[in-house]
Image (cartoon, rainbow over all chains, first blue to last red; front, side):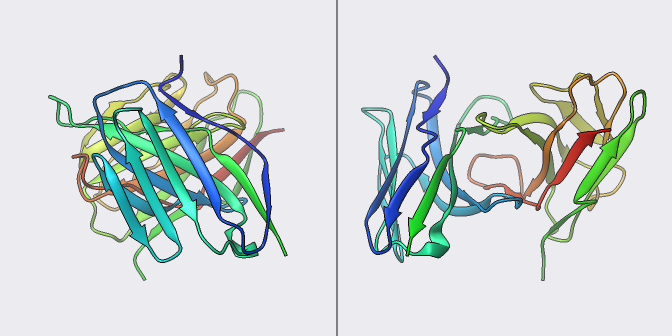
Length: 114
Length: 114
């Protein structure tokens, strides 16, 4: 089983729809959870960063972490064509060493159709 | 504006040739990273550096080498020993390597074989 799993899509939605993007993970030590947006031929851009369980909202974006289910979600409200990109989830643990690497999901490709 | 600059955007390698990818940051970040991105896979860590003149192997370091002589710069050399170098290479940096310091990425270099 991979440490982080993410449905690759592609996911296609009409403009204005609510989008739900999800990742599951297997390592219960993960405490920090991130969502990145990556446009074609560009580097990932940090969208949301959360610690432990709960919700975090930033504009049209809401990140949700359910550690009991090892499941994280990113919701996009009122989706726009400019949201069309690949969304990567990422997570890391708080370990005993000075560096715990970040594990990335493979990404979900999203298209928002005008 | 602060950021991470990767160059060149596109690079072609001939058989038996070493090539070097440049990564410069002006964010005053201590930690820098190199990742490889292949279709359908999460980002894979090649090397990382927590401070100047120190670096550590990641998960797929074979066939790659790095140096960290300046805080701002972390070049990656893809050697002829790397038999499958075609990929999108991403450089990242963070204020530190503790988990609560998220990574920020450059816009990548796409390496192809001639």
